[in-house]
Image (cartoon, rainbow, N blue to C red; front, side, top):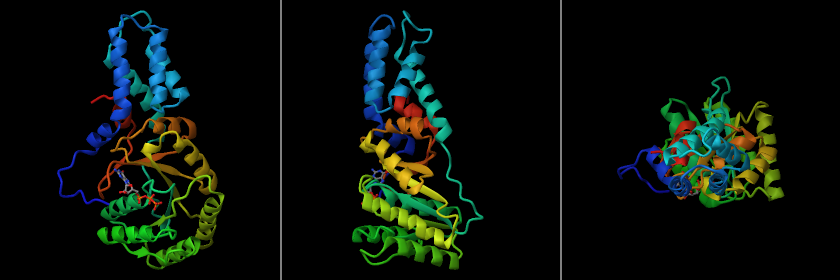
Length: 313
Ligand SMILES: Nc1nc2c(ncn2[C@@H]2O[C@H](COP(=O)(O)OP(=O)(O)OP(=O)(O)O)[C@@H](O)[C@H]2O)c(=O)[nH]1
């Protein structure tokens, strides 16, 4: 965890668009090639479609965008900006329905958020950022170090707890994560906590045993509050590309994912996969992570993301 608070920081938009450069610049190059040719034809549209596929946008969306570029423009000269505009417009159409804020229902006390994902996707960091955000909104927050698998994860969560002045319920390494979740929820009820964020061990979506353990965490939480968890956030690392599709499928089956957070969009990200995910699963996307610092969590907005993908400044 780096403390980036002392360094002048780029806006989250700049970090997002820098992070998506790999996607947007290959798109830009293809588009620039295109405009050197005289007129739009099928071969050029196929090239565009290929670039969109390589950017992880998925077949349906790539075909749809190529069709939209072609509509009314065959045999006409076309500019790079025109193509980028179509890409941004079509991507925004896919993303708009899923760009939803995470609503905290104040009637649920505590509002229980279970945070799941594969190893290293950014769960603990995201919990730290969320706890700071909720605390700044005047809510009483508690963290549960349900990643009992790794001692470092428990420590990391405690550090976030100290930074954000939030109580952390933690057990020993190797202790049962379901009973830890149970204890944390019981304590949160007693202490009149508004939001309980539960960390879980990073697991691979194809490890049946670990996925069963996650099911157990959900079952045990429900013994304390039959309506919990009230949100199940799947944290996805933007750099994994296509693998995100099977992660969403597996975690949705096991834990009933209610929303997504995509992290590491500031790095050499392959954020195009978010478009394919939106098209396929239609799960809400609440936040994006654009750095390791406490403030590096931005609400997900369809227009900004679509423009960053298309390489529009
Ligand atoms: N650049 C960047 N790094 C991030 C972001 N989110 C998390 N990280 C980093 O990614 C690494 C893994 O993050 P963690 O929060 O430990 O991931 P985790 O999912 O809890 O990992 P496990 O405990 O192994 O399951 C850390 O070095 C984080 O600082 C982000 O949005 N941008």
